[in-house]
Structure formats: structure tokens, C-alpha cells
Image (tube, rainbow, N blue to C red; front, side):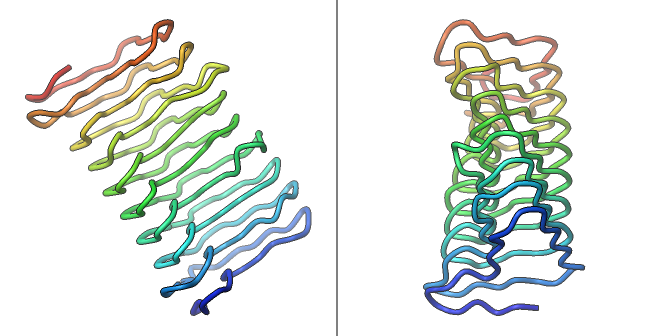
Length: 212
């Protein structure tokens, strides 16, 4: 296991083609630390099988193309649980979880696939997907919103499950695809919200006592 130090990142990856298997180890941050894992912009980097918690920045802050995160749990960080930098497309997040993070769970701003992940009790979005990113087969509860879709190039949310979110899916894009999602809406909350025209909503199921 690794204990963070004030003013420092936990692990920094600054070379292409690196695979980091944490083998279940925990990276624990404290007040004044930076990011749990910092991926300096690179290509072909994989990080898997670890727990990142309590950092003053992001749990994982990643830049580059062709990055893969697998089986990472990131919680109780003051930034995002998992945060990809805006200018880098072509990344994958698979079977990860992000909970109780201050800014949000998983941020996928540019052509990133988020698959089979869990986001829970984040203060911001459970998963933010923009500019061609796709969110599929994920479970999200008690986030605000559950999934945020923004930007262009058809950001997509397909086959996800929601419970207890203030808004299930919030869509500010003009060409998003929202299909086959199951959203349980508590009283006073909203299942689907679109703030722009031009989006596609197909075969979604919204149940409960809130606004549909």
C-alpha cells in the first residue's frame, strides 16, 4: 500500500506503453496531496486492479490516447474519481467504481468508452460524457445528475441503470443518443432532462414518483 505525502502525486506514469497492475493495493491520500495516480500524456497505458482514496485532487488524472483503466475503485477524493483530460480521445474505462467524490465520479470528455462501471453518491455527475463518449451497462445511484451528456459527435448513454439521482440523465448536447436506460425516479426528481433540441431518446424506462 501507499500513503500519500502533502504536495505530491501518489504514482506518476510518464512513459508510453506502461501497464500498472496494483494487485489490490490501496493508494491513500491526505490533506494537501495531489492526485492518487497521474498519467502524464502518453499512449498505450493500462492501470488496473487497485483502490485510490482520499486524495486532495483526482483519484486518477489521465492524459493521453489509448489509455485503459480496469477494476479501479476511486472514492472520497476532492476532485473527480477518474478524470480524463479534454484533448485526448480514444480511451476506455471498464469495470471501475467511483463514489463519494467531490467533483464527480468519472469524467469522459472526449471519445471515451465507459463500460460496466459503478458511480455512487458523488456530489457532481456520476458520469460526465461529452464529444463522442459512450456510457454503457453502468449502474449509477445518488448522483446529480446520474449521467451528463454534453458537446457534439453523438455522446451516448445505452443500457444503464439509475436509482436515487436528482436527475437521471441530463442532456445539453444537440445530437446525443439515449437508449434503453432504466431510471428509478424518487419523488421530486427527474428521469430525463434535455436542455437542447436534436437529441434521440429511444426505449428508455422511467419509473417512480418523480417527473418523467
